[in-house]
Length: 333
Image 1 (cartoon, rainbow, N blue to C red):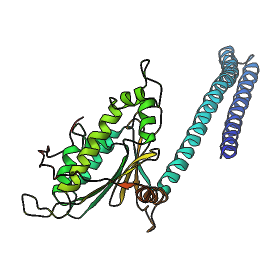
Image 2: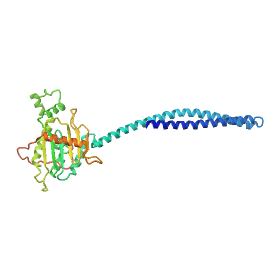
Image 3: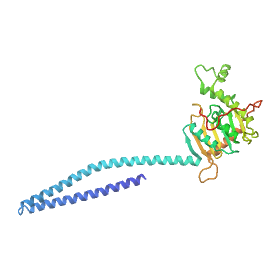
Image 4: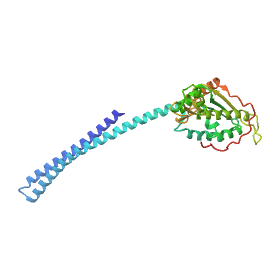
């Protein structure tokens, strides 16, 4: 493409030179003819001789000045065009890279990227708001605080969905696991933190926000096992949804929310708390294909494997009393 552009530019310059040189040559010839005519008229008519001679000089001088002007402007023109062509080349390269990235992302199943979790939570809230009885939401994470803690932005929506007959499967991190303790150590360590693994450190761990959120979510999940067993009836005398929960001890790799043909994925890291990384929205199928997209297949398999490695969360020893849940949209946290 660059070679073609440069060849075309060269042809434009050459054509411009031909026109300029031809015009300059013709002007010079006309000027010389006028001056010769002036000499011929010198003895016949002094007035017309002077007019012809001066006109010839003007034409020749104009031609020379025009030629000089053309060279000066040509230099500026070349620099400007060269600069514009370079910018165009750079823009084309950026566009080509963007198209390649976008094409690869779409083929893998990626349909959107959220810069923060709030935008993804808004989307999940909308999906649950429109969910129908019997639909299934699968979620995996650390505490799943957005769904299972009172401060969570989907706390009320989750309860409403279960009450309306939506089924939910949840995977939480075991609060007594080494993975949970390591994460608390990484997220909340300070100058006064006792040595990791000591009895004093364990006491410190039980006071951390990580442990508190895991315990709060786990306790609510246990109560949901009883309240939403798929058999009880809601105020409309309709069966409630079924809530299932399992706990795992492995190092958390990602947050996952899978509903129907849509998946939300956030990778975890030790550089900060969950919810700080971009979240990807993944479609089950891509346009023109009936097969599951690559990303959807990989993380659906990840969810199923983690379920197999996890332990069922035990319900409480007693039937917990009904709790008053906020209803409507996502709860601000």
